[in-house]
Length: 417
Image 1 (cartoon, rainbow, N blue to C red):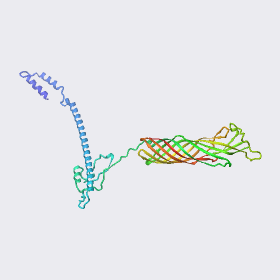
Image 2: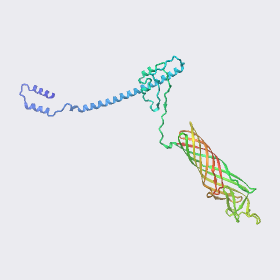
Image 3: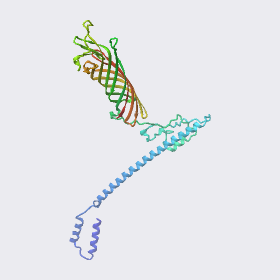
Image 4: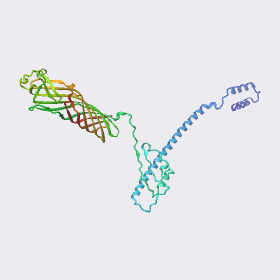
């Protein structure tokens, strides 16, 4: 409208003293009015951009102000807690240094003793509530200090702020309770064998030796120091018996003889020896004993190989980088191979497999003490003396055999997952 008025005024000034050209005037008016634009349409995008910018600035400034206020509140209340604790410590020192007198003023009943609350470690920055302050009514530091300014304020009971250790997250990895150990062994053997019924001039000696292969053991560690272990190992055993001036009797009339050894009788004929027959072993004279026999020396050597499966249960205790384990358990032995070699002077040895004549399983009971040193969280070395008592010994199907007790010393390395 303002543009229209200005244009009309302009026309009037131009047409002063002339006849008004009606057609020209209305044509110009039509040109102006024919394409109208509202005033607010020209600046719509400007207003929108201004509104968005203002909203963003307002939201950002509001967030910064609120965050700053929160930080200030936390800092103020942390200072309040620190000042309260400092005042407690000072009051305790003053009370302990000054003798107790009868003139000391009693604490007013409307004032509550100052109590420092215990916070878990993960909530040590939590805000103090009004009930944690002296009068339970105002949380401002000025009123706290005003109430604490009493010279006769008694701290009863004396509580020192402490933090509860935050329990670490329980590991979902079950391997963290497992450890594996590899060890080598040395053993001192104690042989328990049955005595033989031989002729008066006969004598014999027994000698046993063992060779232990490395063992592998897997342990599972329960809470509170208990553990269980399962392992596997192998052991080779050699039992040598030396018989002298011993009567060897024939079990038939064809010079077939029975040689006594730890698992019973070894039956052998002269044909079984590579250098037979035996020229020095004639049968008895016609008027002699019904059972022929010879007087000879011989050696019996028994070789056993068996697997060991120890199952232990015990308790362990740590001392810094050192650890101590006490354990007991059972060991099952499974016989895998057994051979007996008979050696007669001047003849080649005769060897036979006797595993089918023996019982495959035997049982031991053991106790051990293990001393460990851990180089780091996973790797350790250990020394383990143990005593092994054999309940069920190595025996034949005829129930003849022996038992073997051992003192063992194991040394090895361990790895904890």
